[in-house]
Length: 577
Image 1 (cartoon, rainbow, N blue to C red):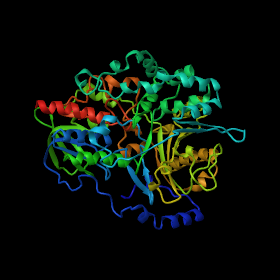
Image 2 (spheres, rainbow, N blue to C red; image 1 turned 90 degrees about the horizontal axis):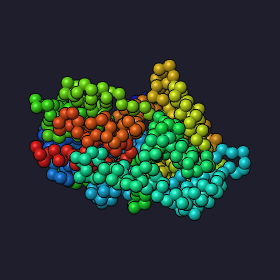
Image 3 (cartoon, rainbow, N blue to C red; image 1 turned 180 degrees about the vertical axis):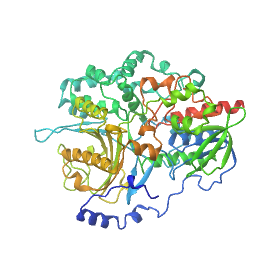
Image 4 (cartoon, one colour; image 1 turned 135 degrees about the vertical axis):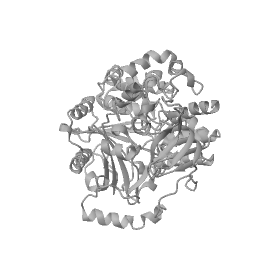
């Protein structure tokens, strides 16, 4: 792996006994796991960079790779240029601590559109999934012994029994929600937002039909209002509300927060609506499968090729890109998987863009509450509400998204309020996942990788102070203290960690403001207004330049819809040239 900057070095934790134990376990770990001593070659690594292509894709995030695969499959000679040494954008697997392979940024899969699986034959190209059931675990901090927990899964009877611990009424209501639940509203989301791309999929209103009034409420209301109408038990409401605020600088009481919940439940896996899974080998394995599909059709894919600017011809149309080393590549189409801000404020000549458009892009809301922490541990966490057996074998809840500090919506709101004052949350909202429970290849025998998606943390601290090493580590310590309260012994099990605050996520992955969606998923930045009004159809003010990343409709998450739709629009234009 490439040497990281000091600020991003995984921080080893003290403990001679732990270090010795890990050293013994890692002595043969690389050989046992089949890990090479050099970087893995990416698909298309042997391709030679050509001076001219039909299409160039800026950035090898999953959307960029999807766009390239569809273009190349249609006979459009396509090159993908990635600035980092690894493919996938935020969907990557990185061995940041020796022997431990992390989905360093995005870490779960559900939203990828089924049509993309089929069209690109991702299973044939190596994609394997580990579905999770149960999928959500919320332990309580309570004086009673043992404390309670809420375990949600696809077994309706067991889920009802779990909910009944806190509210028999809610257990009864949940059985009869049926088509009123957000899961049934998902099909309206991934479609193209404007009539001239309706050939790819129909407009949202046509799909939702009679459910449109209910959907409209979820789109516009605070999720707290919606959940209060449905349920009465706080642990259930807070657990559901986490998906309404995840990745968003919003409280459950923020109008429009319901949309983010809708966004996260519209996916499906293997025909099961709302299901989530770990990707075997980490999220980078998904990006690798998409890249393999693109390369199989002839796409050229390059890493460590940062694009410095988009080239614009005398006719005002995009005609290629210039790399950081000055190399120029000519093309008839340029698709950018980068954020709208990077694409239009840094890569595109400003004189080619309408001033009003530039102002709108510059004013996009990119606030992010997220700090992602990746931890290597020597044993599974044992939660007070569901202790791990002495043999150390995982229980069903270990495969879940574990929600901590989520006993009630008041805790979520207070965590949000802290960040509004420029302070990291005193009790951060934590989603803890342990993918190595289902995919042992990610860690040495007996060890595990832990993904911690935490919020709320402001981009800039109170008084305009930037994040430094001291502030970063203090926040990580706070997160670990919270986990320790639910699972005593967790801190002693940690042998290394990687902490990515919003500025770190921006620097490493190109996420503006650290925002995992390339921009807030708020009502004024969705559908016809994403990224800005009048430019929601993937085309930009510069003919031949298209936006294909999460900043375009339908937004963030590992779904590939923006890449597929943008490729379709670009292909239409290509055929008319």
